[in-house]
Image (cartoon, rainbow, N blue to C red; front, side):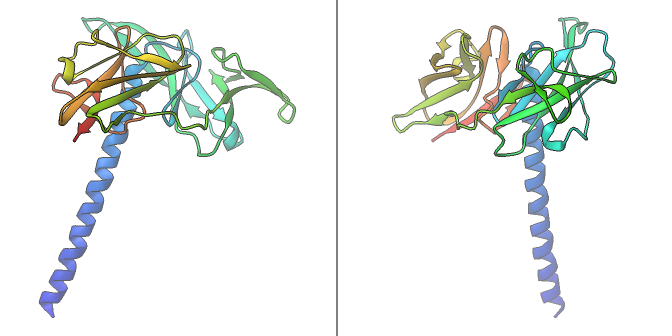
Length: 242
């Protein structure tokens, strides 16, 4: 009887340990993805849809607090922005701005929102898409969400990997990784449709770290949930080629 109780306790402990490990792994992946999105920011601009997330930004200027409220929450919750700061080689700050990363509810085709700048409600000055809400009696900012599933990076049957980056149209997007010794000036992606950049790279079996680049700014693969820190501390996407 005692042996049976011991085995039951051991099984329960093992299952609990596996559950905790799975939760820790999921949390770590979320941290990697969040850090990568923050690192990829090079300045404030119009809202950007990156994978499943939407990045809102605004100039820091002289504001002490910036918040955002959404229609799907009836504008009842104010989400505070965080501050992104760039530094020079000596660690001195060179530029900073406010940002907020939203993972919107599923099946939404658009989002309406308002900003709060030091306690004053306003529209998003960096988003030109606005409309008057007759119910609220105020002008709000709007953002359309493309519900189409964009192509993503995957291994092809011919021994190559098809890399895909989604962003704004008209950019010059490059690819670098462990397969180029982090030289990002070898492979340039082609813009096959507006905002979709693609390239095929032959790769043998193994695990590879990679990052897209716009200028000198590294951009993780937002459609690839596997990210990791490289030996020199950078965040990169990871692909396992079989």
